Length: 168
Ligand SMILES: CC(C)(COP(=O)(O)OP(=O)(O)OC[C@H]1O[C@@H](n2cnc3c(N)ncnc32)[C@H](O)[C@@H]1OP(=O)(O)O)[C@@H](O)C(=O)NCCC(=O)NCCS
Image (cartoon, rainbow, N blue to C red; front, side, top):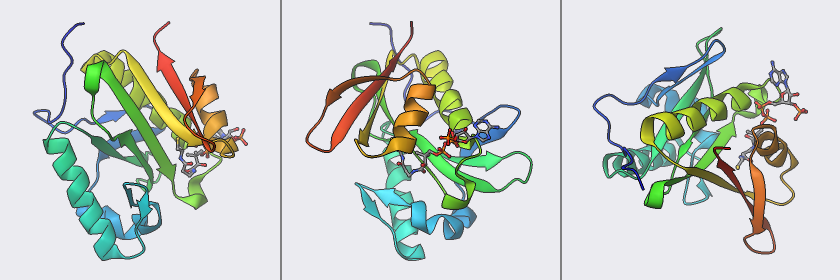
């Protein structure tokens, strides 16, 4: 298998298209993102928790196991959500995760964000497989993944299913 490039990079990955930009999260973003701050599936309820979680995510990036992006609406310059790779890059594979602030759902932001994250993963890092796990009842996530050509692979347990994206 060809060599993959893992974090940390010389510059934090910055990617954009006509609608959105993926950039590093800033400390000043965190106050707006408490309700969508997660670590190990635990959701933050206070700014302090969001800050602590962000420090852990930054450490994971420095150790080569994560890339956590803020998704910015180019039109308003507001952060609308986050996405990234969160559990390492073993064997050229990356697990993608994503969440939008509730007010910004239903506008196509995440479709654009995951497209950019996939492109970065495949073209810049050299990943050959990108996967995502979601709850079976999470219709919006399943619709998003299928819209982006992820295929359902298997049930992980009673509640969750795994989807994967591979180059054709
Ligand atoms: C999963 C999640 C990110 C999906 O959000 P979303 O808003 O449906 O996804 P997008 O931003 O790509 O928007 C797509 C929707 O906007 C609509 N839309 C409106 N304008 C659009 C545009 N210009 N371009 C594309 N889509 C547009 C699409 O039709 C689609 O709506 P539909 O699902 O009713 O058909 C969101 O539900 C979420 O944050 N959930 C909580 C976290 C979560 O479950 N994460 C997934 C773990 S894998």
